[in-house]
Image (tube, rainbow, N blue to C red):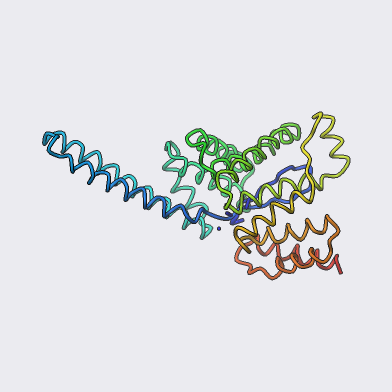
Length: 307
């Protein structure tokens, strides 16, 4: 799947002061292309159905209608092809090529192009050796695309997910107070993404990571947050565990980082046996990406600590 949840899967710092490391998010909606192809088929069949009433039309009207409907079918097929290419480039970690492809659709009214462009923008910002000013520009650019995607289609689960991720990113440049305040909004959009698509593993993973970050927040940082907010965001390891396990349930072994976070969550809960189980799974996960290698190293180090 979703999602290098959250570099092929997304890198995302929930709270810079929490000490939590960045994560990335992997995944696409596996049912997406079937739905798109069905859309193109429906467009074609609707034209055929309309032609059954042809005797009521003049030849001129028919020709005009035929051109409009043919154009609609062409655009639908073009969308399918572009998005297929975009998702292929994403799966191959061709970040720059993906960004340049989708940048052509930055003025689109289609949320499917826009949320992918938001994701591509932030993935590009996370590449090694990215110049600081360019990184900041891409971060805010990604947020604007995510916001536009949400405005165009608030029923799109991916738009909610990437809006949450990108909102967290821009918070890194706006200070702790803004970032903590945004945390409430981030959780709302992640919950909405899960409501719209309960089978998206990366949305579940990211929300689990959100819960984990606040569950392990040191006491002195909690005091700082309490000064800024009368009721700062709170969570527990148990709540984080629920989302990480649910992500595994809907898409087993979809992401090495989810296995690692399960191990770390069980460590936080002092459940050494289960912690060792999932840390071992994370260690043994095939290292296809740089993040997988980082996960492997962290899992090995944590297993040594467990003894």
